[in-house]
Length: 227
Image (cartoon, rainbow, N blue to C red; front, top):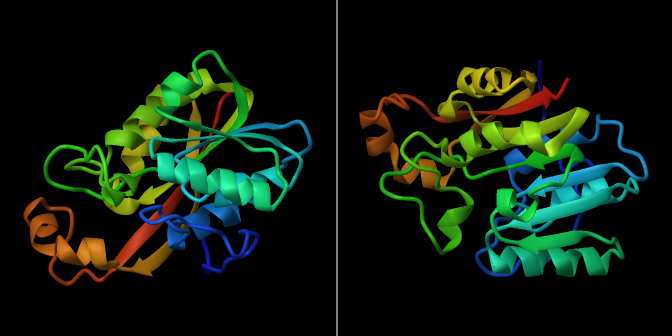
């Protein structure tokens, strides 16, 4: 497990982002660092769940991989398509729920920076909060990915997923292992709390997800292989 300095690295620069679309941040950069270590070749089939601007999908596409990207936000879908056209990369970007849109398909690599911020109340159905709000424990989307990934991956295929340690790193590893995967932490990084976490400090403390002195968030990239 490596603690990683967060630099833009191989992420595409000058990305278009329509209003309300999640722009690449520390979690995206950490996942990009780990993605760059995978052996992507022309013809590799890649799925990105929750593509946002398409930054990670474009990174994978530059290797010649066949990339499918899915997002529940139409604005994200349009953003990713625009960025792909600007770079002349043939991404397939689809709107909707990832499980429904990929039913029956198999991939060599699945990557995701899903919503993972703990939030009170139901999951939002619209607005920019959909990019990060993920239920009271932050695991509403993470757990779906853990359950769905074995059916999405070919034998030897790999899942790369980034989320906050606040959501339970070991819980993710356990869920993936229970689903038949071989999971581990591939990289971690410490980043200052952002405005969303700061605005929820009192609630997070009450839920036992943070303590009063906490100012830094641990990000983790989970790598899981389908045997």
